[in-house]
Length: 35
Image (cartoon, rainbow, N blue to C red; front, side, top):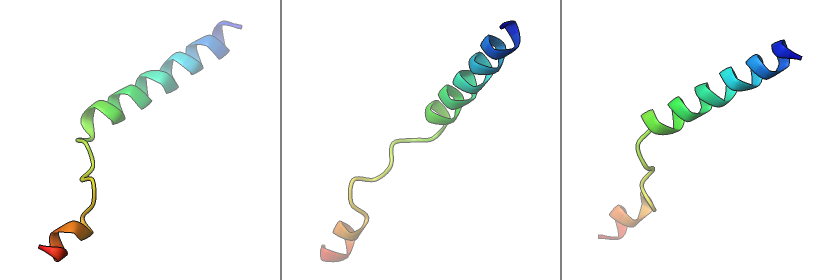
């Protein structure tokens, strides 16, 4: 059971790091062309 918990913790931590490292995506890139 420890292995499963540890694996889940690692995946959750990796997901949190990816989300925190990746900046907020632009709302609509196509909007720039309209301007």
